[in-house]
View 1 (tube, rainbow, N blue to C red):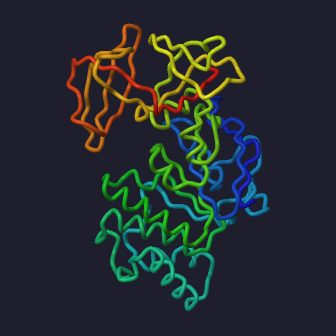
View 2 (cartoon, helix red, strand yellow; view 1 turned 30 degrees about the vertical axis):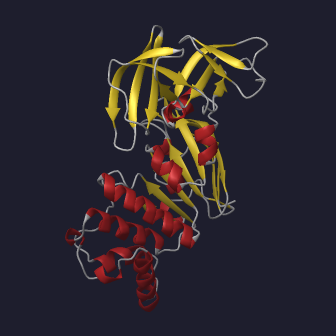
View 3 (cartoon, helix red, strand yellow; view 1 turned 60 degrees about the vertical axis):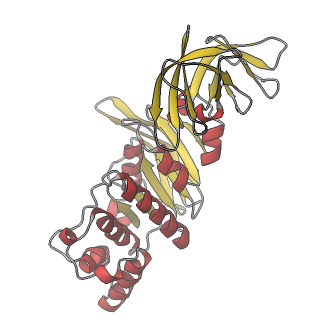
Length: 342
């Protein structure tokens, strides 16, 4: 394994920030720590980097226990949210900084800086000052500086949050290209699910300092194990109710039944339905609901449907759409429901 976190815990002034986090990450894979603000993802990253001392647990990088080593001795590269470039140094010197601290000979340092800038496609900007670069270009330089030391592990602390939407998408894809080409083991902290799903081999969804679920992006999205994961990843509808005895279906409190693919081996108390898996039609069939709100989002329209006992969110990208106030029926023929025990 390239990274082992073993029962890692951290508290601040009696408040638990990270509670028993255990993760095993193979060499060359990308892990996203995903969750809302205050879930413990950044504290976990800072402990891996050596900026925070864990109260309990161990951190092992490539078989070496680094739990109590200072950050400078861990051979870990980090890209900060603010980029943290030195404004008084040109790009090449910014990238070379970590090599200078390691007393790397000048000729070798220059060759490694050149390779790092080439990896992020910034060779032509070596002589520029940081103030002469755009946000996306500064991001690339920060990444080159982290890569030039040839780290055992690369850490990215919400590096895209300061960019506008278009640039964020471009840099997301660029980071994906770079870490895949170099085969570098990477831990990426984000609260943006699309970034986590695109960039990662493994996603760890965190809440309250704990890992709610860890797995592949597809498994996390399609097979959530808790209502928190279902709601946080893709904003699923989590509908409470009960299993219909003797039938492969779940009776929701909204008043309609959800067909299930087979018997459920536990006492399910809720079912998760993805908004994009629900079809809308004319109110000729039950169940019928009223559209309280229609939000045009470009590629899809998001509807809030009101039933007598609650609401349902539906996203539809086909057809002319429906107006607010209209009555519609719902179809679950494409639905892939996931039963939950909470």
